[in-house]
Amino acid sequence: MIWNKERIIAELKALYKKKVDLSYNNLAKKRQALVSAAAYHFKSYRNAVEKAGINYEEIVRRPRWNKQKVIAIIKSAKKKGWDLNWSSVTKRRDDLGKAAFAAIQGRLFGSWDRALTAAGLDADEVSRYRRWSKNTIVFELKARAADGENLNSGAVQQEDPGLHAAALRYFGSYDKALRAARINPNKIRKRKTHRE
Image 1 (tube, rainbow, N blue to C red):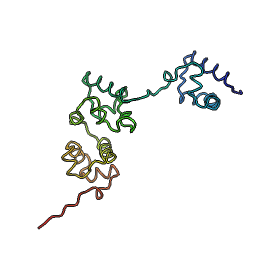
Image 2 (cartoon, helix red, strand yellow):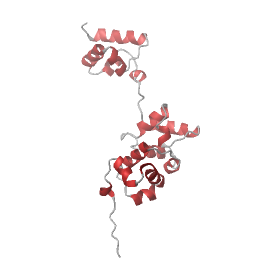
Image 3 (cartoon, one colour):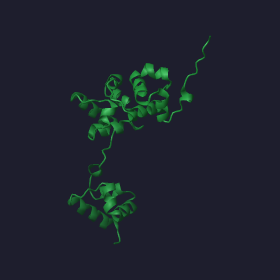
Image 4 (tube, rainbow, N blue to C red):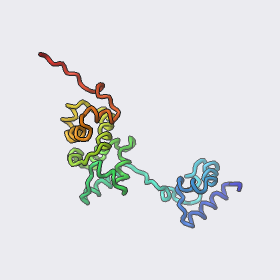
C-alpha cells in the first residue's frame, strides 16, 4: 500500500472509531507501516493524529506528569491515610506509584523527598516509617550521592539514622552497603587522625 496524507488520516480516523488503542507503542507493534508513514508525511506521529482531529493527549498511554499533578496525587493520598514512604509507594501499581517514579525525574523534583516537601509534608516524618530492603537502601545511597550529600558514616547516622541502621542490618556493614550502591567507601570516608 502506498501511503499519502489523506489515506493516513482516513486510516487513523477509522481505527479511532473502532476504539483501537492508538498510542504510539501499541500501534507500532501492529501497524508499523502506518506509524512510519504518519511520522514521514506529518513530521511526527503526533502531528498525524492531531491532523486526523484526534486529541493526542487522550490516546497517550502514559500520563504527562507535571509538578502540580504529582502534588495533587500526594495530597489526595495523604488525605486517604495512605503510606507515603518511598518503599511503599513504589510497590503500588496505581497513580500514586506512577507519580512517585515521575517525581524523581530531574525535570520535576529530582527526589521523592522534594516532592513530599512541595506537597507540604515533612519528608523526614514520612521516611521515619520506611520499610527497608536492600534495594531501597541502595536507592537512597545513590540518591544522596547524586544530590551531592555527605555519605560518610557519621553524617548519615546523624542526618538519616534509619538509613544507616538499615544499611548495617541488611548488609552487615555500612561499607558493604556503599559498595552495593557502587560507591567506593574509601573515597567518601573522612580520614580521622587519632592522637595518642
